[in-house]
Picture 1 (cartoon, rainbow, N blue to C red):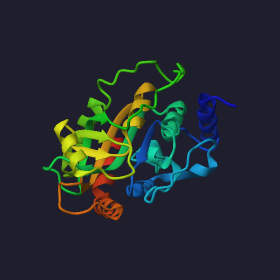
Picture 2 (cartoon, one colour):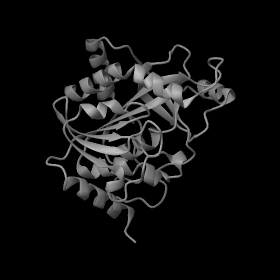
Picture 3 (tube, rainbow, N blue to C red):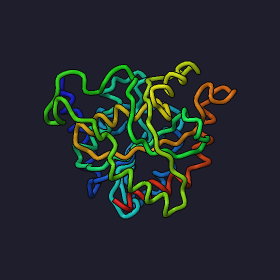
Amino acid sequence: MSSYYDQVREAADFIRGRVAQVPDVAVVLGSGLGDLATRVAGAVTLPYTDIPNWPPSGVVGHAGQLVVGDLAGRRVAVLAGRAHYYEGHSLLRSTFGVRVMGLLGVKTLVLTNAAGGINTAFESGALMVIDDHINLVGTNPLIGPNDERFGPRFPDMTEAYSKRLRALADRVATERGIRLAHGVYAALHGPSYETPAEIRFLRTIGADAVGMSTAPETIVARHMGLEVLAISCITNMAAGVLDAPLDHHEVMETARRVKDQFIGLVEGAIAAL
């Protein structure tokens, strides 16, 4: 049986053989944020099911395909959808796409997600740059024997999210008149939404938003030396903030409503790299 590294390399080689130029920027699109992929020029579209060893994405709002082409003057790979831990994938599998991007030669990773707002100053539809995260998934994608071909045994996470890229996002937001918040993202594994008591706990420990992805991908990216920018779309206020139940349809509708601002911010950041 082939090793995990060999599986990642096989996927990277498959992609490299089907695109004229490998990307140096990758963007992972969260729930309802897939419209950015349609703006990629000269696109080569590869369904995840065609890429060797790539885990499928089965969540509504995730197209499940890799789109490689040109966006905002850069060569990019857009991952339209991600595989989540809560779908039954191991963290090795759910972070597989990031590993492949690293072996392809990607240097900059832009992660996006739909998140619940914990900070009561936020409103539904806000865009938040992630300054730091709290990993409450209950495990870590680096558990197990370390493969030095990916990175060191104990990677530093002091600056998990690039200060340079966060400042760049602020500059782009100012230039384009986009309101942009900053905050700490708490990652839980889901798939159930959090209880009001859990949200009070998360607020107490310093979280501004909560979601079910991103932190494991960031850990893997930093393990491989990629520079990371992450943006949350606050698609709903978390449990107990408002007197209303949570619904994935609300997540999708809010993402649709703010997609122009979101696309403008990501495109502007890529152009300014």
